[in-house]
Length: 283
Length: 256
Image (tube, rainbow over all chains, first blue to last red; front, side, top):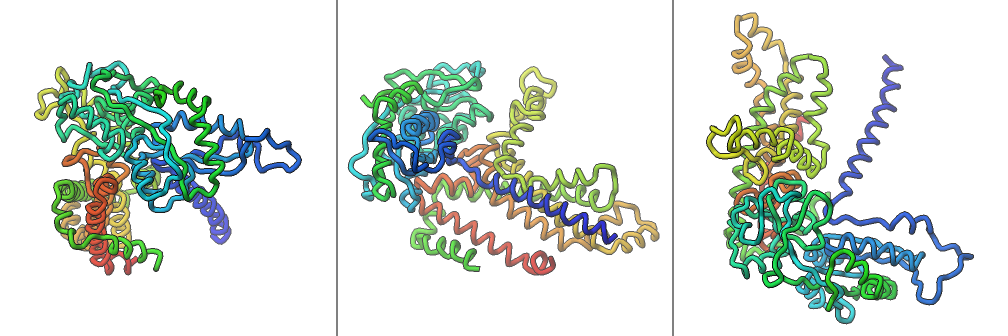
């Protein structure tokens, strides 16, 4: 009996430790995920004093970029490109709805760059003098109807949404939700209130159609990727144009690196990545 | 203690007391309050109805795989709620394991098409909210009641049997009265858990104002559009939680 007790305790300890680790990992995930620097950056690691410095213009430093959820894919690629051009830099991304990010920054979240999906979210920060200089519009986007692969509900346009079942839209304070409400109002389409499910950011809104039971949704053109969903176009005349501003935060701990990142996004490489992802030029 | 008191004190300080009642009277707030009340009570009833036989079986009957069954029942306690929502989708969505066949059967041309109410869909419905809340609340009830059943003096049940009482009579007139305090405590815990559920609800039942937007979901969305209403609703949840804890202090906290 005594030796059995001794054997049990270490086993329980290990199991408890495993459970706690699993819990900790699970608790660590949230809708606004922080993408860690890519493997290539961590492989480069801390600066080796004897390593040659890059040509003038290569920056070092560590910044946090808060970007709208719809920018997840292009900014992740841009981040990799930025790190390739500046091997000693570290960029951490936080993706969530522009409104949520703005609220966090207003509450003091440490961030260096803010890229929003509409001017209104940026305005909440410029109004509090949290943006250095004036923000620059670096891309534009448009909305589209998204349906499940194969379009089982046979949706051909906005008018069909009024009777197509459950429609997934972004929350009315989320930029894509604001744009969607505008587009629906302009097209005079009234979806019954008990058929609209509101997502907290555009990726959650998309997931309701891709993985959930929503019959259709309205998201950005750039979000319709993969083989679970397809797009039903909204004619240009009825569509809204989303403008994406980017700015450096006045409370940034590393202004020069932040400005270098913004310059990279606005520059040719950033623009190419954004256009490859389906974004429209700032125009 | 400050770790717990400070956020709550901050919430109280943040509230706009002058407009509190009008904020709570706004349509979104009233909808969320009503829905939360209905769904949490529904989830509690379901948790008791399903949980009582389950707890009794786990406490009294020995069968192969019992440890596994208990682990399954208690799994939602440690499962992150959003993961629970994803699991519920896998089972009960229109393309899910059970939800799929049910939906097809109750649609036009299916085996059960004669049932009233049209195709059966759990997602984006108030029923779905109750389902999601029961999923997370049931383990709380089961764990409380099973513990009580195990620790009660079973000799009373044995005596009842020797006096000729059948199993059901014994259960009704002997067992239940003996574990009633724990039954109530378990039900209240399940209710409180159901009331606060967010992740599984928003993932499985969606966020439809008036139909699935319960208090926690309402607070989350209102934080950006009307923060003063969000804080008012948070205060309601805070008041409810405090009441629950005060009411349970003798049964659950001190006894354990």
